[in-house]
Amino acid sequence: MPKFEYVACESSGQEVTGTLEAPSRGGALSSLANQQLFPIRVAPAESATQRSRWARRRVSSRHLTMFYRQLADLLRSGVPLLRSLNLLERQTSSATLKRVVQQVREEVADGARLAEALNRHPYVFSDLAVNMVRAGEEGSFLEDVLKRIAIFTEHQQDLKNRAYGAMIYPAFLMGAITLIVAGMLVFFVPKFQPLLDRLSEQGELPWPTIALLAFSEVTQKYWPLVVVAIILTGLALSKWMKGEAGRQHIDTMVIRAIGIGPVVRSLAIARFCRILGTLLGNGVPILRSLSIAKEATANTVLSRAIGAAAENISEGKSLAEPLAGSRQFPEEIVEMIAVGEEANNLEQVLIDIADGMERRTNQLLDIFVRMLEPILLTGMAGVVLFVVAALLWPIMQTASIL
Image 1: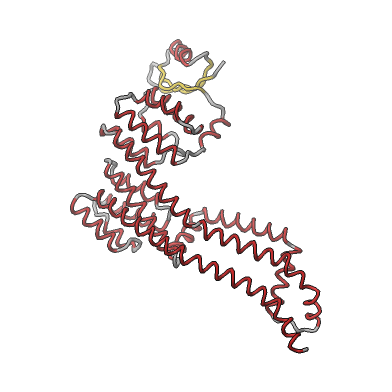
Image 2 (image 1 turned 90 degrees about the horizontal axis):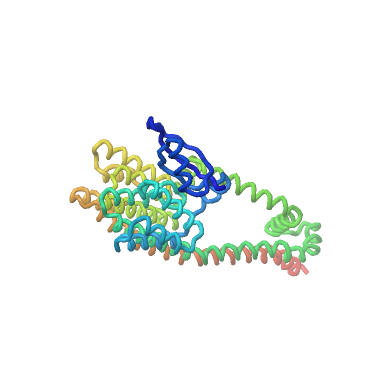
């Protein structure tokens, strides 16, 4: 017999939770009524393994965009919320989203608000979406909010895809360089070993050849230890980067790096401005909007600057002043924010800033990729030239002596 989890109230008003067995959800409700309990929520019980498996699964932006857009269209057409969720549950091709929408529908059927039900699935629905839905429910413009969330999600995914797409070729070049060097050290260099050993006994090897032979020998004899050392170093570095000090150090280095630094900074500021403007435009309070938007920068340096700005706003000050004091935001951006605050149209100004910054980011990214390609090709050519020169140098010296 299936089990059901329930949240109910006793006659005294005290809330109780538990599980019970019943042939159906209706049977579970009847059982609770017989116990003089007033049900608040009744849902099929899941094992801890099932809950853990589904709770942390993510849904692609494409499926989420479709979900928001279709839900907005159904609600605008007059279809009730529960029926709309039921239709979307049956239509979605994502198994994870289907399960999540089913749980959201059950929670809404039990009396929960849509924002509250979405908030119980943080790995699927972001804080941005939950807060915008909450504002839409309170302001009776839920359909418009859902449409805006769909547009925003699609826009952010397009921007992310462009950034990833631009880095595919440089990543391919880095992989090619690594494979070529490894192949030369393992297969090509050892063929010269007997000749170079005789020259080494005569003390006629130049330092590049000695360094190359030593590196090749270590690679051939101790490659398992080298692989283990690389893995352990990577794990230790990953753990350090997840800590507060590590993230702060890495984010500072990245944002100051030549070439990629301006791209990262522009992308983070554009994301912050778009999310903040979208939230403010949908009635979310500015302090809550700043709290959500600062996490969207994905950079601790900028997050701290925005956090300081939020503290100043809670004291009645403007947003532009602390952002200018942080020296992390360009002067023209700060000036536009200040004008937007004075004109009382900050949300629209922030969206305009985001549009401009994203165009600038695309230009900077194109320039960075175009610069990176010849740099990587030159580096690959330099490594190959070093290996060839280290092998031929002693041979040419011997030939000149003869």
